[in-house]
Image (cartoon, rainbow, N blue to C red; front, top):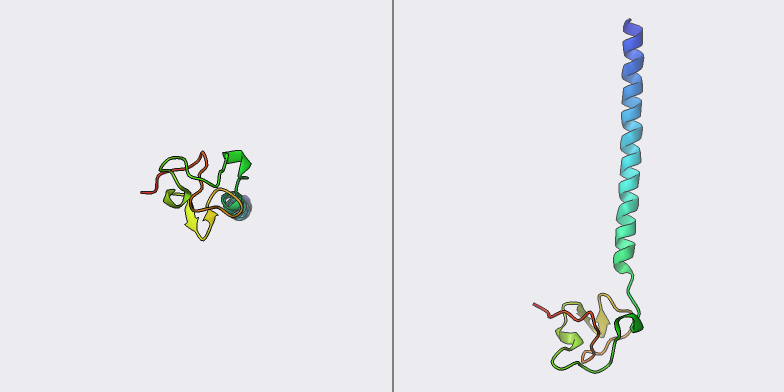
Length: 91
């Protein structure tokens, strides 16, 4: 009977270790996917970007503005006085 308990115990530890390693691998892949998705930007056409402001709404006053002619969500060079439909007031 002791031999049977030892075998079950070893199998359980091995299964636990395999499950843990598998879960850690899956989590690291999910982290990579999240970072990759975050890095992808949309085209100017997709957000109806224009080089001129829409009233008082300007890219350099948007929460997504990164400065140096760059946006967190729109690809390419962005004019500070531009506008697109995902414009969000900076806080």
